[in-house]
Image 1 (cartoon, helix red, strand yellow):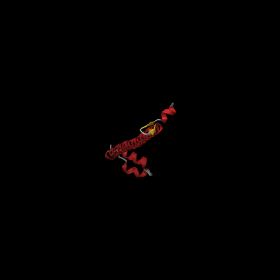
Image 2 (tube, one colour; image 1 turned 120 degrees about the horizontal axis):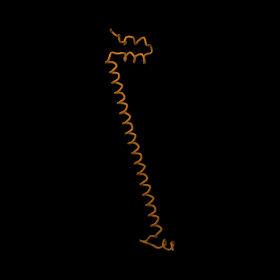
Image 3 (cartoon, one colour; image 1 turned 60 degrees about the vertical axis):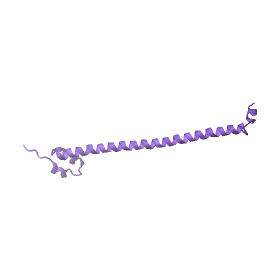
Image 4 (cartoon, one colour; image 1 turned 90 degrees about the horizontal axis):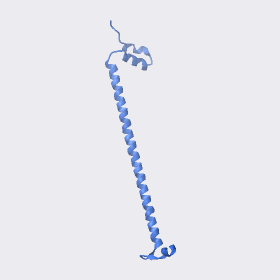
Length: 105
């Protein structure tokens, strides 16, 4: 019965030719949709990476601003904080004696 149905002609072609054409169209549609999804995934990954970089740069700028404010506070106020910072970072702590605040009674 299936062989008889496949053997009959429709519009001058055998039905199996029409079935092959339909199958090819379906496979082509699936491949096209898959290619679109892959392209969308790649675009989304690039967008996500860009957003991540922007967030990282914002954090870096905020941290640099905080560090600059702390440095300015230390340099503005003449107290032992500047001397302490020098002692922590200097190779020879004797060089930091010029920053020591002399307490006047």
